[in-house]
Amino acid sequence: MRRSTLAALLSGLALLLQADPALAQRSTTRGLDLGLHLTGSSLTVEDDDGRDDGAGVGIHVGYGINRTVMVFLQIDGAGFMVEDGTIEGDWTMAHLDLGARFHFANTLRRWVPYLQAALSGRSVGVSDATVGDDTDAEVSFSGGGLSGGGGLLVYFNETFAADVQLMLTGGQFTEIQVNNVTVSGFEIDATSSRLSLGISWWP
Image 1 (cartoon, rainbow, N blue to C red):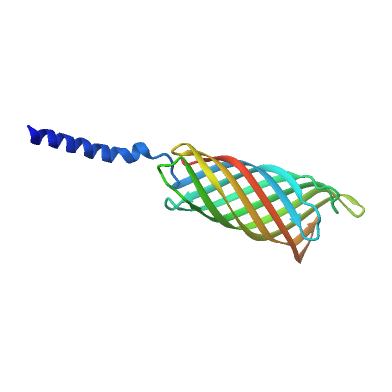
Image 2 (image 1 turned 120 degrees about the vertical axis):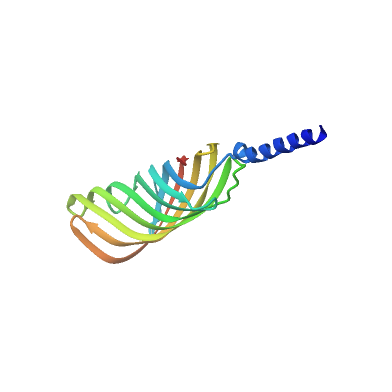
């Protein structure tokens, strides 16, 4: 009788040990990750006393190689106002980031902080710009840079989370285009920042 009771207890304990991780898991960072976010952006250019601020949206696609490391592609776009700028018009800014994220992951927690770094392409465009006597010019500045930052995932369930993120990008605008004329070889230092609030989903 004692042996059968002990065997039953051991079997029950084994079942609990097998089931507990699945029941206790509250977050995942493995596999495909899709995200959408709202973004507040800013841009500061060398020899410019002010900072220009704007707002926009962004998306990201990532893949968690394991619980810690993810590779990702992120695209952000924003429109912003430039006060007393050299070029007047409707300004927009876009970032394209290819990088890696490092999660401080624990599947038993509903919150997961992370750090990330990326190679970035950055472009600023001005439509309906006033350049000299041309009041309807199309102007763009583009170049590469490095981005770094971090964020916090707060999970509603195992595969769906709110995502708060801050990214800083440093680099140079190396090419300027006015209408159909492109000039390269510039070295205009510029710093931009992005503060985002969005959602992430692991399908």
